[in-house]
Length: 139
Length: 216
Image 1: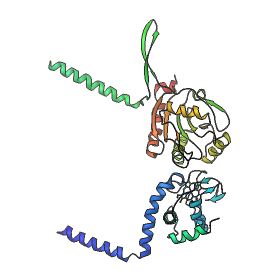
Image 2: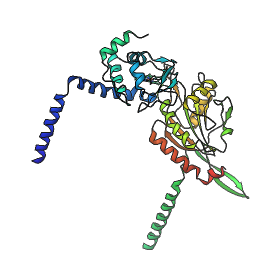
Image 3: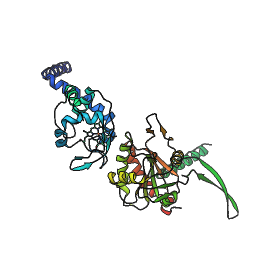
Image 4: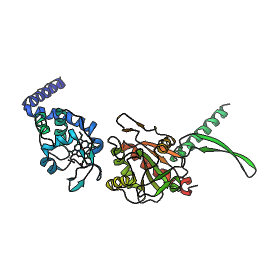
């Protein structure tokens, strides 16, 4: 009996919390969780489980200042890759190749939402709409 | 009769225990063949184990490296290429742990054979080593003839690399532990940090074996 009451209360609370979440939060949570799976499959080998990178071969994804400053070009990096472009990440120079990732704007948005809100970064959601716009300006 | 059974049981239990204490030694992999030699006028049958055959390569410093340069060393081998987008970064992230654990010891080495020797020249291997943070002579990155390296991979009991349509090389990410007698003593999935920890523990076990201390 007691268990029943407790579980009903829990259920009600869960529904309450869920419905009180704004739509934005729900979208964010969905982007973030799908993004984490994409990250594991397509990025983790190089950039590491905790975004720690690999010595001077693969840059870390923990440089919040870099990520913020280059927010609009991140979709281009993923879609078109990088070839020996010099970049300073966590005060260290990197000059490697990142392969072209054939990904849809929505997937790019999801993985970037994951990256820019993990490993100590906190930049909020990056939407598919934003990614689509940014991709038009890729050089 | 009962006594006999008891005796058998005791002998079995004893030998089982004996066997257990032997587990501090690592297994020996590969084919084995009996060889009969004459010692002090008597015929003695011994076991010959599969060993890693000779090879000719160049390391990241441009020094010529053959199997002779590994005499007196326990070593870990793997196959990779510098532009590998898939498992190699993970393998070498994990191999760095092996490197850090043994770089101060003179008789442990790591060798990574490039399976893309056309691209991975000495200069490229040196740059890769520098970026990885590898110095000194503990970890060699080796360039050799492609056919030789592919053939050699079979002796290390790993799958022969293949090339797919995009000219990417498909290979598996094993780390192979080889003892001072050039026998294979363990294989580990280099993409799994847990297995690489086992490798580090096994190298310590191996170093303590009498055969490895004498190196004969």
